[in-house]
Length: 283
Image 1 (tube, one colour):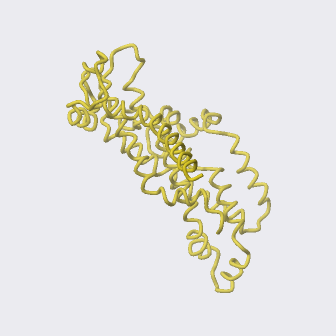
Image 2 (cartoon, rainbow, N blue to C red; image 1 turned 90 degrees about the vertical axis):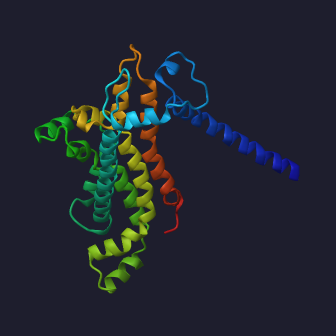
Image 3 (spheres, one colour; image 1 turned 90 degrees about the horizontal axis):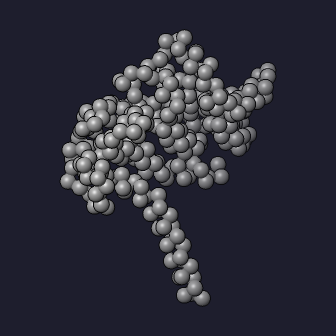
């Protein structure tokens, strides 16, 4: 019995290790490719061991973004743009969602449920569906090639509002009554009680929305035209080009590896709160 349990234990670990290897192998190939020169990669002579050009390739990608056959934007500039976008989107989404959910749950006002269902209906209208009118509004307001144009149209979130609404509905009435007896006004109740209670949900949402903002492709492609405003996802796509000519794969792979680092760092730093926010049921 004990032997069978141990075999099942090892079997589960082997399956998990196989899954990790399946996802990690392409990343490892990109990491190795970023340490070789262009000739080695182009001739298909790249092995599975790192080469001697790591410092040169990463320095070149970070400072100039240019190689022997490509002239791109430096990674430091693209990562700055992506980082601003990835921080502004979750911050704005969470702030607006917290306030809208707070209003829907704790305040009685005319057409309250109508406005709630209007927010709910917007779930059926993703960015791709409303992209033309959104672009027209952004262009009319002169926000093309600006950080406001990159972030403001993506800030409102019905999903986050619904998540916070469902969480606020679990707050017991006794807690609300106790706050009133203690003399707390609506905003003090919001800042001193609701925000601390919803910290794990907020952290989990922040991680998801940070990755969502970092990986945005279609909207930045439309709303930015200058190299100064290029995000790292758009920059990598432009480096690859049409695929008809030989491109500088070591520089592209070095850029890709550096582009993966901020989301990985955010997930690692906030892993505990992320898991707790997704699994916590008792408030």
